[in-house]
Image 1: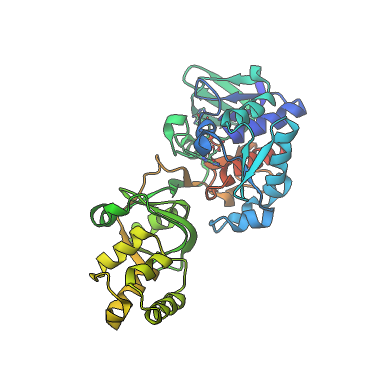
Image 2: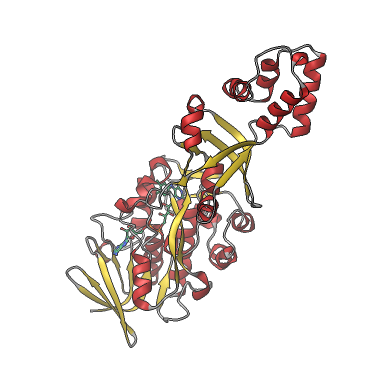
Length: 401
Ligand SMILES: Cc1cc2nc3c(=O)[nH]c(=O)nc-3n(C[C@H](O)[C@H](O)[C@H](O)COP(=O)(O)OP(=O)(O)OC[C@H]3O[C@@H](n4cnc5c(N)ncnc54)[C@H](O)[C@@H]3O)c2cc1C
């Protein structure tokens, strides 16, 4: 049989496209290499799936770091966070707002999200255990070879994700297909992930678990900075602001040593100096002043690193006070490496958006060929951005076929 459309990959992007094709009565087939659909979706958000967020399209796009983020305007304007909310509500699953940003299913189970997506497709049109190995285009037909079958279709949608967490099935095959079909792509590299620092492991083991709620992390020697939470770990540092900085740290590490700097306090340098001056007037011990600026463990660490005893602030030299202010407001850590792309939550890289039509997700070079979701060179920070991008590009593609 010749199908109108074949979709490769049963993650949120592929499932959304199939749902739209199903509604339109188009003759489609979904090929998924795993024994079940949506394996990665099931582990998202600690198995709770942060489906989307409460940002409008402009704020959503300005939260992304890619230079070519405008590529997503078309898809998100057609199908943005509000549409995602409505879709799940219409399908009997309310999404609940957390921390005034992230939406999770009311069931707190990612499986409910997958169930809704599955309910909108015809399961008879799904072939599980179908590992696509090779794609050839002959005239107007795509010939798709799995290990034990050959399928033919007029249009082909590639929704195979990146190669983060390959055990879930997302092993980067979209780029293999791109190579077979002559489509331009960028290799996948780690984006949202932790970073390693031997300095932290060796010199700051007692800070393990200490977190900063809101700090500005800067990559020294660049203009890159991100604000948010940070946590010291046994291997280095993590937390939202580190995850968000990781792709840039990775890029910089390809050419040079990287040092990051951040404040141990939310106060500015000027405010810190003022609080120390006030402490002098109040005749305070230095530790007491520090504990008003940061956590107890960090306060003790600042004294230890600056080699200063806990004594009355008036007994501390100006030079030593400067050392303390510097540590509090500009704490530096050398970074050795970024977690591998296989263990990153999300990867950068993928099909280059310049080669795709933002109104349809179709390749400009190979008509009838579409790329959607994380297999494309688009990604966002944690906060429901990536599932939303998968659903939004999946919808846009299905709707335009
Ligand atoms: C631990 C973790 C937690 C996350 N949490 C969140 C979160 O809470 N919110 C959020 O927005 N994002 C989250 N993400 C990111 C999000 O999961 C992905 O961005 C999203 O799943 C991408 O969807 P996709 O459909 O493009 O690809 P995928 O979900 O990766 O699906 C691709 C599918 O294609 C199949 N496939 C691959 N190659 C082939 C082949 N050759 N033949 C046949 N089938 C193939 C795979 O088996 C897979 O089922 C998380 C990621 C991880 C790893």
